[in-house]
Length: 452
Image 1 (cartoon, rainbow, N blue to C red):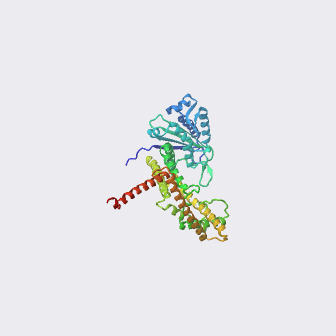
Image 2: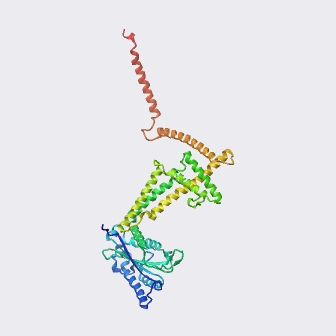
Image 3: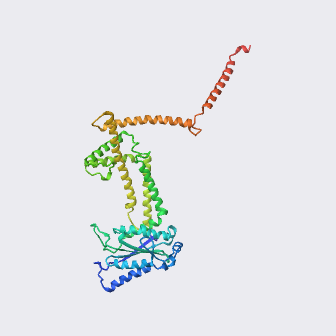
């Protein structure tokens, strides 16, 4: 099976630092060649003939010789003074740092259909390169120098990039920072760069709408666990079985906070220790969560299913990016999708734990005030909850009856309205008149005298 041509291709090479222990060539000629290579590289990158000047560059003065075709870290075109400075800096940095070069090429139609050259330059400078370097293990972007140039004079538009460490900036496994010793950019790092580029190019057209839809659905699901929202699911739980679990959870959380001397108003689920009490709290919290999300008929369950569909679409989108670039990867490990799943899970668990603590304290205070009890059992609390629920049901019934009558008498829907007082009186008079006439006609049937 023939693989199709990818949208983005990335190739790279590197020069080891002049004093790198892996660099066995310390001859004077080698050093001179490397320093000359820096000059040649910057000159080639910034060659104005390599770029077809567009309308934006024309009006920004790019054709007047004030700027050259080299983009700096801040997203601006370099001046001739900047070119001189960059060359001097790189010649100084290359003594101790490796110098990396790369070329990123595209299908011609891929850029023209999705993004302008100017927008791509800005995204490369301010988003793609910083994220890529961070992924490669460099600790502080401020300690990196990078430049790039987009060349559009060939059939396939392409970007030349170069980056180098200003000072020791590579974070090793032991948390120590030093110059990066290895020069080769790994396959994983190359794939990450290509994904960053494609996401930036397609962001507005595909990725942003998908992410926006996902975030909107997540926010809606969160509203079910926000006490200030009308559809707050934990407030609407009226099944005594699950309310008993919520009361028990609140009791356990209160005990946990007391043992650990915690005085803050909120408690985080993930901060709960895995001791015996902590495990019991976590297990009970997950039971309550499972109950809330397990009802196939509830809107909450529908909302959770919709989020799963959103995340599946995001996964398929990332899978499409990999397929288009002939990348074999385990899409199930997608970090963006996994973080969304983890975020939802933590939000729900935190909400349940904190609501349970609040409700336990609230109901406890009511029972104490009503009965002057020093020791309160879960049974005492459940009885109070059952009593409150019954009162609430009666109130709801009254409110519903009143609302129905209001709709009939005051509503705008003529199909639901009772007739007005005038129309009712008129109808009764008409009925009385018709009944009187019918009575007179009926009595004639028994009036024999008139026939004689």
